[in-house]
Image (cartoon, rainbow, N blue to C red):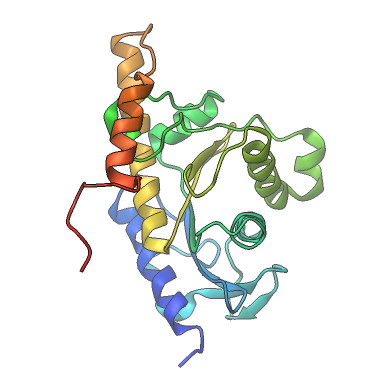
Length: 240
């Protein structure tokens, strides 16, 4: 049994949630599961259909982007995961142990419009207190240089330039491309990607119904976020 069995199992289970949650078609999308202490993550192999995936097919990659274990090539988006783990989880100390990239329809629609997802309602505010950020397009130079790595660099620079905390804002759109999300586990990353898709759908419906819709008032945003995530949160059951 692999010494990385735990994160391989986590990555496999999380990747299988992509088709189950209707977050991507065919081989689109990927999830990784990170072991910060070991400095490695498990990720979906590139181009392999979901029904053909197994725990054993997950590829172990280190933070230099080198394959540590596995016979298959890792996802083509692996360099993006490397950058996000190094910059957010390691350098910034964010509690990120899972990252997901999908091509879910409504989130991609906002990304293709190069527009952040407005915070119109309490469903959105239950999860993050801001609009879902959207980066600009990658520059031509960045695309020619190292496309997937530069995608990660673009996300990181967008967060830092806009003073966004990746612990609190756990989702992003890459302009013209699509969504990335992350979480404390690979499963939580998938959950956040599903939330992103749902609030993207709701926001689109909102602007179709009312093109002049405005953001939810800040006092309602704060109430809904704090009741789930604040120091005196009361949503759900107390942990034993």
